[in-house]
Image (tube, rainbow, N blue to C red):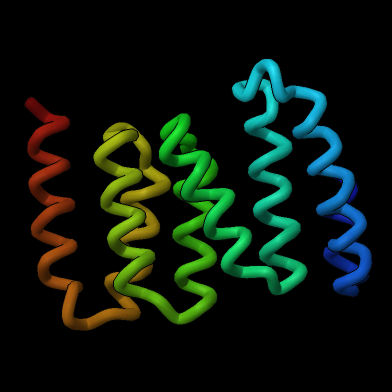
Length: 138
């Protein structure tokens, strides 16, 4: 993780390519126990994203979601879709994340922030959030 923090100052693509290789090697070490590789796979997806290899980042995150319902993968996918201008997709991923993790305030916060950007979904999102609030109070 420190490697990525250090790279935020040096945003060169070649540095992220080095990280991608490193994370792939780490993942191979856990081929017999895929759950142990989840953190490295999330970091790999982030490195793909920073290296502008967006589709590879998406595929890695989708795989983590399909295989493990990974919380961090949902959050990263939301951020990628937002940064790529795919607000509708980001909103859908936030809803799916909230469905899997109903006690997560992170997905609720994401939906609120995105609703401010997307006026068409604003009323709908607030009504869903009100329903969620009522469910939690029961």
